Every structure is written in structure tokens, then in C-alpha cells.
Image (tube, rainbow over all chains, first blue to last red; front, side):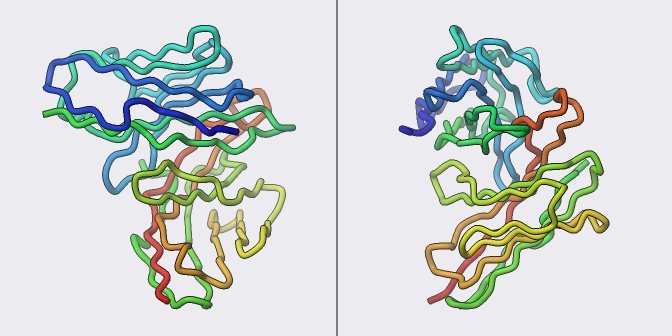
Length: 116
Length: 118
């Protein structure tokens, strides 16, 4: 279990630029999630993949956001035309099916995005 | 619409004493509850969970209690240690929309900062 890996750890970008984040889940986990956390708040669900299929997207995920998980392995989250309101910690998590429930989510250390 | 609330932003306790962190929820469809701990510059780490068919789950120094009628859960840490100092999040999920199985769409509270003094 090498843990969930996210890259980069920090990203500073100018408003209007596009950014892409990468997440490598724990290898045997078939479920992958993206969450966003702003200061003083808990993480908020953005989207969820089972293998390569994106099964749900939150209304928080505007059309400037797109997530992919080609081949059901790593995932990318792209934000186009970034806005200052996109500044947040973007967390990736993975899990596997365990009986009637998920195994608990294992989170990565996140990518902190700052939009100037 | 804050469906999961942690009304205490912070809690300070002495080493060796009990820490009690509280969480309230409003959505009666939630049937699986978790506690996560978060250190600075790290992602949340799973601590303990409880399904709605139980009212208590214990794992070492950590016990989670669930009161469904009050829509309230609490995390007890006994004895508290300085290394427990972190932000604690409660989270909830519902299996209702997932074909009878819970999945990872968690709704988190705002977090409680626990400080354990030596």
C-alpha cells in the first residue's frame, strides 16, 4: 500500500490559465474520487469514478472542470479558464468495494491551487 | 444547506483525559458515518466508522457513538495524547442512491481542531 499520490503539491496560476492535476490511486482500488476543500470547511465531493467510468458529478463541478480516468488507473482533473474562486485544496481519494460498503476512502495529500 | 455540522470549531484537553468530539446531521437518509483526522499539509486519514445498524463502535482508544433519533454522533478518545492534536472531521454517506451499497460520496462537517496539552 503505497498510498494515494497527487501531483503537483502546489500550483500557482494566473486567472484565465488552464491547470491540470494528476492522481495515482492505490493500485488495487477501483474507485476514485475528487474532493475540494476550502479554508475552514470540510472536503466537498466533486466527482467519482468506478474503473474508467465517471458515475457522478457534483453541481459544484462547472463546465470549466473536467475529470478523466483513462484505463481505470490514474486520473486527471483539469480546470479551464481558472478563476480566483477556484483557489482551494483539491483532494483525490480511492477505495475498493468491501462487502455491503466501500472500504474507507484513502486520501492523498492534495494539490493546493492558488489563482492570482 | 449544511447537512453535517460540527458546532465546536475547537477543543482543548489535557493529556490523559477524555476528548469528546460531536457531530450532528440533518439528512435521515445517511446510514454510514465516519471520522477522519487531518494533520497540516496532509490529506484526511480514516479513523473509525459506524453503520446505522449499530449504536457504538470501538477501536482501541477511539469509540464512536451514534444516536439515530437525535441524529447525533460523537467520537471519544481515551486517553488523549499530544499526538492526537489535529483537525477531526465527521462524514456521512447514504446507500439509498447507490443500488443498496454505500459508496464514497461523503458529506463532511466543517471540522473540529483538537489540541491535547502535555
